[in-house]
Length: 471
Image 1 (cartoon, rainbow, N blue to C red):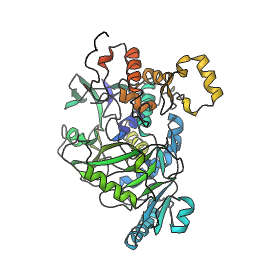
Image 2: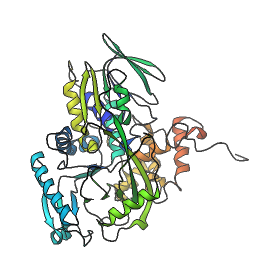
Image 3: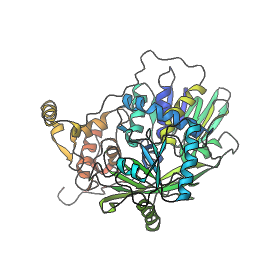
Image 4: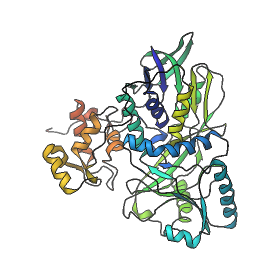
């Protein structure tokens, strides 16, 4: 019997698993996908919001501000790339200036330090803004993070501390028992005392397996452009349009690897799996982005993508023990990424009868990032392990040694996309055109399988069908 079963291994489920792994508890995480963080956690704006925007008094406001504060420690312990570059919300007319003024009041109520600067003052800290900008709200505590790495790191650390992860297991039903629950999946059944529902866009359906309908999740799609890394000072802050009822608006932001994100759109859809993109929506994203940045370099575009946000009809995060030992953690849309460490703390407080482990280790084994090393350090590494001398991804300068390490760790990669999320081969200008075949060969060798069994991302997304003549 498990003490706790967590349904869903996105950033929230993974952070909860990591936080609870400090206790003497038998913890199971069930994930319907073939890797962690394959949903909203890997298709978002990668922003650690400061917390000035959520409605004062809401869970979003409280947990966003607390989560933002916790991220310095979280990033250090998990060895995840995180940079506090600050954000600027830009106003192009008097109506938008009035919205900025209301955000200053919200920021004060939420306990977030912000300041409003005029156009000339903004130009000194962010030369990229357009001449249309009148004023901007600066939030210095806003940060950017590698969200793929964060989810993997949190789950890896949880597993290092004893958590069990079962991938490709979709929960089909939950039966309430006197001693807890029976969680049935497409593969097996598990007896558990607690169930923590972190099922993202499906969290309303999981809730209804044991409880009356109390909230509905409506999927909202956001579409983005990814620009190549061409100038580290092109945009220095996270730049936002003023927020609306649909969200925080379009942004232009650097990433921790100095690519640039432009987006997202905001479209309610019916299909919770529909991550398609379309020209009309992306054209609208472009027009909004043009109001932020002078000389927007969309000629540097290397990829477009979309992600689905789990929007609750309650208007706030849904974090509650609806019946004894069944905890919903639902509706975790933006600022969910920023709030995730604080959400984990909140759930931790809801778990009774827990005893700390003596050997809990909050630190993940550090990654070796070859492209951050000096030439001398690289030469020394190659002498120790020749795999670090074989560069597989030339765009991002990723070695075979780094890919092998990403496969062999706890919560290791088993797919091409899994390797890409962990150590970035395929993220560069050629989008895997050069390195993907080599990554497949390494995966097949390390996993001990035929290369035709290697998938790109999802289950059954096979890349190769059969060998050519003579092979």
